[in-house]
Length: 172
Image (cartoon, rainbow, N blue to C red):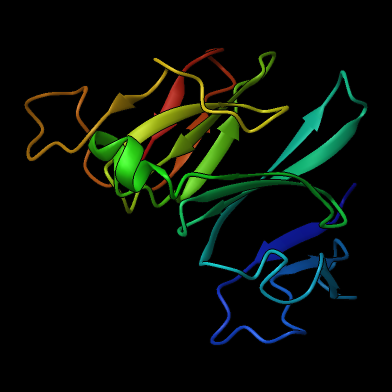
């Protein structure tokens, strides 16, 4: 749509706090989006933001990685489609805890949303992009203390795809 989308972690959350901003392509006309306050996108610690154009749905969506064990899918206007809160993993999936997502990306042509747990347990997790449900058996990585094991990760902060090689993830 030619716009610029930006999210930030506020110093404090009040009833009117909004953390998703849309700018015109030239950087003007800043508009705050989404429901205000702790019931909206301002809860927790907003971190990563990714846009995806879903050809089958005929529209674009934003995926918000929130360090508060949460991933959120919204419309471009900030309307929440789904919220996936994984705080229950603290007791139900201790091997994957803590979970503090930093980034997410949809694998093109699939229903997979790959989420980087960059500030948590250093895993990459797969969610269903339509529902936010965790896809069992699709996580990989985990805390690595050195580079001798390429399957283990240490603070996988960013995640993206390489359009030259479909299915290839770039993790930083």
